[in-house]
Amino acid sequence: MTKITSGQNKQLRRVLNDAADKVVPVPDYCVSLEAQFQRLVKFNRELSFGFSDKLLANAERALKRLSPTWPEQQGTILTLVPYGASVWETHQMHGRAIRATYSGAELSVWHGFQSEHQDMGQSHGEMPTIRLLSGIKHPAKPCIWLERIDLLTHWDKQNGLAPNKVRGKESAHMGLLASAWQHKALVQLQDGTIWPYWNLAGVEVNVPGCELWSHCPYVDWDRDDRYLYWGALDVAYPNRDCSSPVLRECKLLAA
Image (cartoon, rainbow, N blue to C red; front, side, top):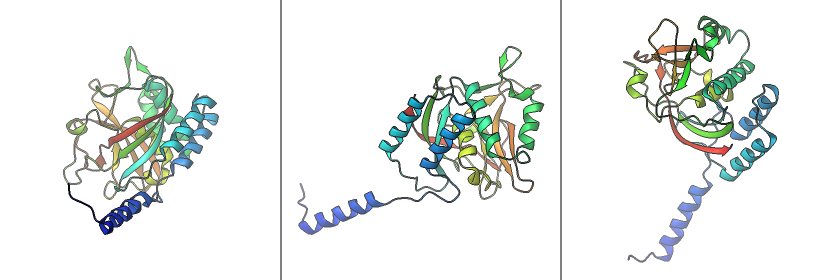
């Protein structure tokens, strides 16, 4: 075993201390976890998310105990993601939060899509209209997760990447809807050139008149007309303006 000199030991200690002290600032276009939690508490009260005071207190303690640092990699974010008891309930929860975050004009096309496709109802006849991709498990109970999402993965600006070519168990899903209302300024950077629009590649939806489960939702901010577009994309279509973000890490805070 090689012996470490006193000078080398001091240098190593200095490097380790510098690394421990390094704090990556939250980008201006994102929201700190503390502010996200306060917004979640506010929406829980105002929009009937249904979380108990005990669950929220447990989530806050877990978040403080973890004390996560912001990711260094550009385009990777941290988002607090609430889940309902089902995919449908979770989808509705985030829909209410998005409507509360964006003005009526910004949501004009969102409402248009909802109306056109029967308000994305829980079922179309006997067939559900929204589900998670096979291999992705929904928590199936009210809970709050901390998710680290890479927004720039699977983005080919030249030729596009079809969601069905890159999606899998790691594909982001409801965390992207939470990010849409937690990080509004980030969404408003979307232009399809410097910042991509987001495919929810971990989600499948049924669109009337189309093959079953042939579409995934996407979130698209129109910078010219300033509205949020919530649409559905054929999973075989390689839209070069869209990425298919990946869930890099997740941690259950409270259930």
